[in-house]
Length: 305
Picture (tube, rainbow, N blue to C red):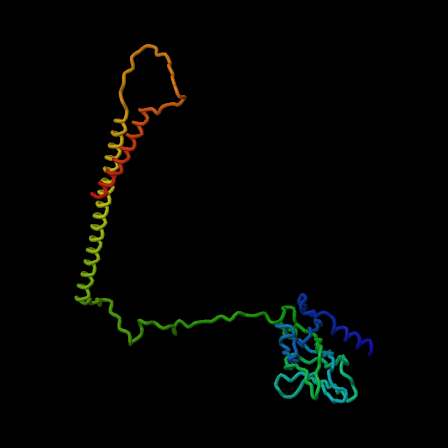
């Protein structure tokens, strides 16, 4: 018995694992939950800790441990419990009495067999403390057995499995509604739709307005295109006139001189050692200055015009 208790206590400290996470098997298998106590609220839902979508789960053991915190002279009672799913009392309730004289910080570990109780009967779980005290480090684990063939339809190899038969809906064609057979509906193949003359006139006026708007836009686009072409032509003319004037002024700055043939001996005499300024260079510089002033004036006059 002591070895069994040690084995179950070690199961509490073992990492959370469930054999139901392995490949599903038709044969019954066993598993256990993780710690059901997630916070200091000391309450938990069985649906959150047991495998979901698996039929045939039976709870077999409840294993728990905690540390009591209380004054030495106080009497504290601790209940580890699960309500019945229908709310009529408890399906599991274990009581621990901590009598006066017991000291704070003592730990208790228990493994309580409950038989094979179907999960459908287990309601909310909790740890209830009665008296001036509290619990710390609470850990509650459930061991269970899974019988997959509890629901024969779980697997085709389960005893009692019935192959699903698709439900085929058969419609009676005589019950289908036919509008042509409805006495409340009058259909006349020869009837003509009479249109309101005012509606036809409004439609014609609207169409005429749309056409006139389209023609106005086209005329405006043509006028704008002609104006832009005239502006481009005037700009090109102005640039051409300025270029001709500039070229004529530049040509006038050069002199046509005929140099007679023969040999001219080089005679260089610089009495004071300084090269005098060239008169022709001064004339060219003056001509360029005058040309620049004329071009600026012409541009100013053309812009004003």
